Length: 182
Image (cartoon, rainbow, N blue to C red; front, side):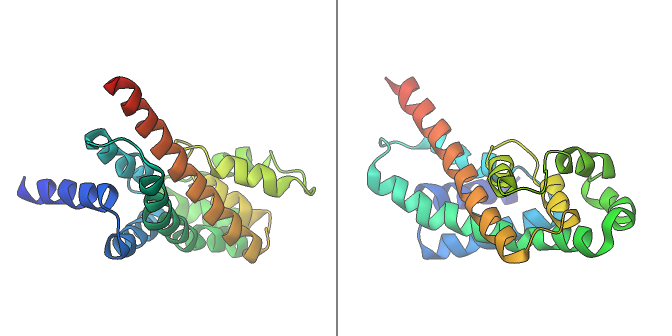
């Protein structure tokens, strides 16, 4: 019980009083989470905003962006490389063999992959699929690998999508709380 209370306090401190030290911890947590798809960390990281005592300020939003959303973006991109690489080099046999360990099926990869047409706006679609807060990212990572998206483009779009996802969650929770406080 004490361990879970400490965990909650660490997350609250990292989000409500973000700094360089908490940014590194958030980076590591998002990297590990993306590797194993354990928790919806964007929901968990936005949760402490329910306990925010002051209003959302421009400075606080900038701090959330720099010390929380950006580390989440980089951690997510690096953590997702395992799934991307597995799909890129192993294809369907690798997904069918190892996907069960991270709750990824070939059907979900095909479903996401069917949205891509091999045209210029695939990157826009990838970023759009990567950004909504509650969509799972594993099928998107695998589809990008199967479709052989170039690695630099994949990393940049994954970073941007994860940052956008995190900021959307912060704005939804923050604006929702400020509306309830009125």
